[in-house]
Image 1 (cartoon, rainbow, N blue to C red):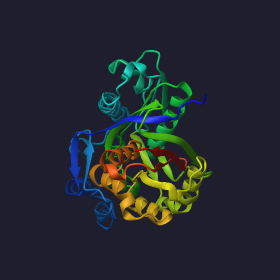
Image 2 (cartoon, rainbow, N blue to C red):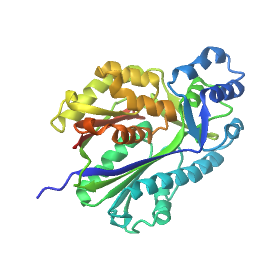
Image 3 (spheres, helix red, strand yellow):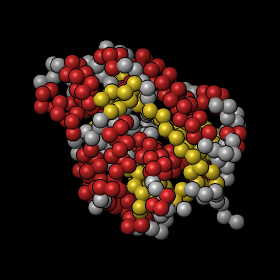
Length: 352
């Protein structure tokens, strides 16, 4: 008998506690980047992000002071652990079989470092089985949510036991108060903090993971990532990202669907990582998607900003939660793009 496919039994999200709106974001940038020559030309970018509000783990003024890597990483460690536990508890509350059945936990984060990884602390805090297999994933950035879901599904199918996946990022911990670069300014307009978690089970009803697909582009390490400095993780991304999306995504989606015997025309539910308004525009243009298909991604971007790895899971949670009963069913695709330059996808079938 073949192994049962993994099904999403529950999914939950946890935004950070301090909301900031567009007016606050622009005022903060005007103060912190006051000596930046191109500031007035770049400030309107805040209004074109598609973001009305984001959430961060400290009041804005905390970020105005220059801080070293150790202090920022301590903020990540404390805040990521707390948010990850909130998201995981919410997901486990919706898992009727109980946490003691879990066979593995996949933990995704790229905005700080800890050894042991934070999932080790979570095992005790959440009273998970001490024999649980731990799979920490680092360095996947915005692709981490889709990648974590795919790796968790593979583990679930292989172990034939439930698997917990948690993605958490404290993007605000990477802000550079003394850095007047364009990349740092745009990052301050886009990124928020949050966590998402899901429990996957073998068999069962609900969205079933049919397969995952990964693609890495050679020679693109400079497109997106971190530059490690004494004052922390400095964001690196190029203006060419929307162009790369238009060039890469059609073929990537074709291949992701083909691996499970589908075509892009079969996809009804699009859980696309909303890297920003321009990235969503690039998705729409490249895939010929109507506005309604991107509405969940736009809503998450508008309400939470780009939280890196958890964001695609926020979109998936919104689709599963808000789709009216008559419209449920069919196939869906979760996609994230990250450092490498890389793309990660998960194809699912949502039976009524």
